[in-house]
Length: 315
Image (tube, rainbow, N blue to C red):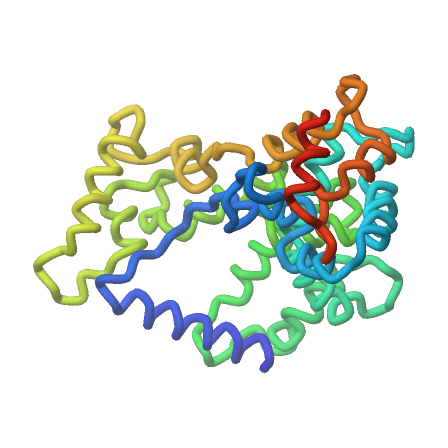
């Protein structure tokens, strides 16, 4: 499927979704839960395993012996210790947990990387991305399918430049990840807000008024009566979205809406893991301290939680 076919499909899917008046479009980016397990160490460490490894990777440890689990955990600790000082801090643990939880994002980037890195130099330039994505449009700037490719390309270039921290128009894998998934990076949040406002702000006055806000998630489609959830959203806009009560959302109000300051589950879990494993209470972990508490961090087929909890209580 080439770019035009993909965009046409995307447009039709969007139109189909908007034609259903009872379906609600959600633009809010929430941090996902670290695990669907209950976080109760008195019962099991399953939540911690999912949080530390990611749910899929955690399953692979359940098939290992304790010795194998400890060996693999030791190798993971070497990766977590980013500055190679021999200690794992809460900050390094938090970074690791966030990375483990976002594995699906990194897998998505890997799947696309080869397509765009045309010269196989381990980097993706703006020219490479533009040529792969918009090559057909560049050959035919007046297509018959009704899409404004020029506007889309300008928008992509703006986001690419924002993701490209050093301004050389060449993206590393991390910068390309920020380009494809800007909502996951603090320094990209302004571009997420800007693009969202451009999508919803139909009169281009730089604000989102109540009708634009409702119109983005609900189409009347000839129906006079609005569903209850739409009435609730109108109340939400007035009571919570429009904080200064001027009848519209500005950039900061829109940011508070789509990028809420959620409870940081990764930070809380990192703090918990350090607290439970830090034998000498110096606020950081050695590899030995982590491996000694391997049953908290990972699992194994021989783990007995009664025995594990005895060890847990000893610290």
